[in-house]
Each structure stands twice: as C-alpha cells, then as structure tokens.
Image (cartoon, rainbow over all chains, first blue to last red; front, side, top):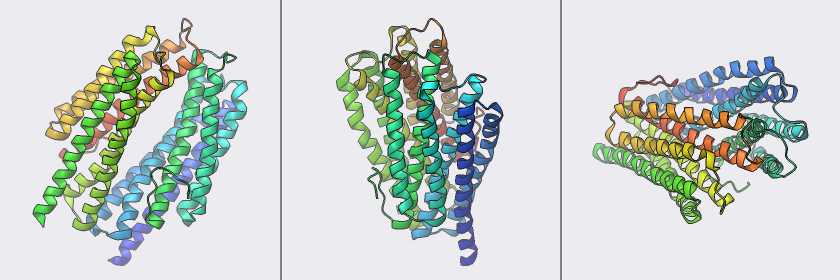
Length: 219
Length: 219
C-alpha cells in the first residue's frame, strides 16, 4: 500500500513538471508570435492551452483521490495540498501565454506592440521564459537557490512593467487608444506570469522547508 | 471525535461566509470611492484588505489541519478541498476591490473614470456588488438558483467590459494615455471580480451536487 502511495505522489510531482514544461513552451511560442506577428504560432499556443487545462484538472482529481483514499499526513499531505495550489498557478500561467497569443490574433496582420516598445517586450519575454524554465528545474530538483533567482528576475519584470506605464503616461506617447490598451494589457500579462511563477516557487520552498513566506521576502 | 469534526467543518463554512461579507463591503466602499474620488474611503479599503488576507490564510491552515488530523472522506473531503479553493478566489476578489481603491488613490484628486464612462462604471459597481451579495447568500443557504442568477449577472458584466474596449477603440475616444489605461484596468478588475464570483459559485454547486461544470454552462 505504502509503495503504491509513494508511486502516486511521485506521479503528481512528475505531472507538475510536465505542466511547467508545457507552460514554458507556450510562453516561448507566444512571445515569438508577439515579436513577429506570427498568427500560425499564435493559433498553436491557443490550441495547446487545452492540454494544460486538461492536465491540471487531471492532477487535481488525482490529488483529491489520494487525499480520499490514503489520508496522507505531515509532509505527504503538504505535498498534495501544495500540488493542488501549484497546478492552479501553472494553469493560470498557461492562460496568460494564451492571452498574449490572443492579442496577436486580434491585431493580425498589425503588430500588437509599437516599434518604440519592442525592446522592452523582448526583455519581458526573455525574463518570463527564464522564470518558467527555472521553475521547471526547481520542481524537478528542489534546489532552493533557484527560488532566489526567480525572485530576482521577477524584480526586473516589475521594473519593466512600471516602465511601460511610465511611457504611456509620457506626453510624448502618441499611440491610439487600442494600442495603448494592448500595450498595458500585454505588460500586465507578463507581470502576472512572473508573479505566478514566484508564487509557485514559494510553494516549492514551503514544501521543502515547511516555512511559508507569503509576503515575498527573498530567501 | 465526530462531533468536534462537524463543528470544525461548520466553522470553515462560517469563515467563508465572513470573508465573502468583507469582500462585499470592500467592493461597496471601493466603488463609492471610485465614483466620488473619495481618498479616505479608498485608504480604508486598502487597509481592510489585510484582514481578508489574514482570514484566508487562517482558513487555509485550519483546512489543512482538518485534512491532517481527521482524514475526511467523501463529501467532507470535498467540502474541505472546496473551501481551500473558494478562499483563494474570495481573497482575489478582495485584492481586486483593493486594486480599484489603489487607482482612486493614485489619481486623487482627479477622478479615475472620465465623465463619458461614469454610467458604465456605476452599472459595473452595481452588478459586481450584486454578485458578491448573492455569493454570500449562496454560501450560507446553498440555494443553487442563486448560482444561476450569478451567471446571468456575470453575462452583463462581460457585455459592459466588451463595451469599454469598444469605446476605447472608437476614433471619437480622446482621453490621455494614462486615463485610457486606467479605464481598461478598472474594467478588467470589475470583469475579473465577477468571474471569480462565478468560479466560487460553481464550487458551491459542485459541493452540493457533486457535478463539476468547468465550462460554465448555466444550471
């Protein structure tokens, strides 16, 4: 019985890693689509999001079954409750990649991001993808240094996000209403993606150390 | 033992109702602050959000303790896992009321919403508050008709949200960059608030009927 249980727990962990990998892939494609106004790539991201949603629902049901049938305690229980929460955050990260792809589709063949903001959004993309990659690694290896690195990258994402809002507020900003909204929404998607990444990494830390840092002090 | 357990379950339910009430109050104050550029009311909402966050964390810990100590099964287990999820959504609704209040504080003494949009945002406020009130009632009384009503109000919120984006895209739209962003963000906060309300109401339905409707068909 115990052996079956450990195998089930292990599977839950594996599935989190798989979801995290799919999220990274979605973000890579969505940001490339954003940079190159590539509608086919955008459609691909939108279609692939259903797979992430399915895996999340499946993982949730699996976790609830484990709770019901095994009545786990202590660190096993923490792991299951943690998995329930992490899967929700990862699924939202997938949604955010999809939202970026949907902006690309909405404006196609026009680019979503005006020329003056391209550099900022390329850096956004690079940072968010880095967070997602480190998250996958963290879920696999439980190396808490990665959590500190994710916090640091997230700080930079927050700076970029603040910079976008400052640019929009500048009298020199001359884009149309819809472009202004697109830029602010896209910026918010990148910021939320990174923030969910931090939230998952914090849950991993909690699982490993038992210490919860809701207010996000760095490690 | 069983009696203690039922009392604990009951407490979890009561605490969800309490959080839902605080969320309603936060949204009432935040929307009044938005309509009247009332900075003191906005500050009150921002300060009161800590209480919602505290109650959510407390409820989560309590739920995890119940899982650990009682190993509940079947409908009791569903109730606890449901509570863990609902508290997360309710806490986010509180955050969204706070975000609205923060917009008021950011632009004070100027109003956040331009004159031409005031009517729309008053209706947004009315609908979101109605959703929040019905949610509290639903959590108390488990009357599933309320869940269908929440779905209907949410449809109207989605229409309002689409209307805002249409207005911004109109060539006649002549607000500044920051105002455009504020309006689109505020609109999104109202839309997200309603959406989380729907998500909580769906979880209540799941608890009562055991049927999960992730795609949001109405009851």
